[in-house]
Length: 99
Image 1 (cartoon, helix red, strand yellow):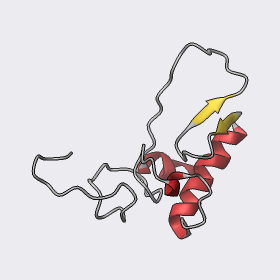
Image 2 (cartoon, rainbow, N blue to C red):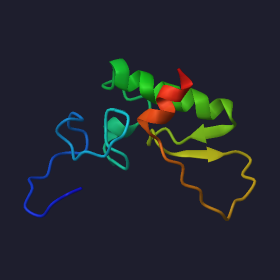
Image 3 (cartoon, one colour):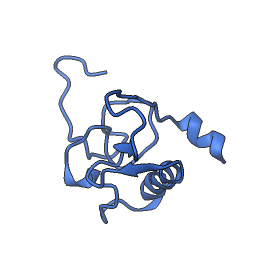
């Protein structure tokens, strides 16, 4: 969590420089509105890119569609509940469970 007075860092800074959020390293923080958050941004490589592709491929296999500008943003098509919003956590534990 942010503590008043702490210096702010960009949401696309390396994970160890951003505020700790206990998440899988995806190359940017969640809700980072920078072009580096585009799912297939070519600047995101290595493990971070593999994490994004794992998320994208897994959710697309389940029938969801990624918003290309936000690696975290997926919509089920056709939407079964178009007026309902869902929030699913992404964590290192869920990644480990898939291996």
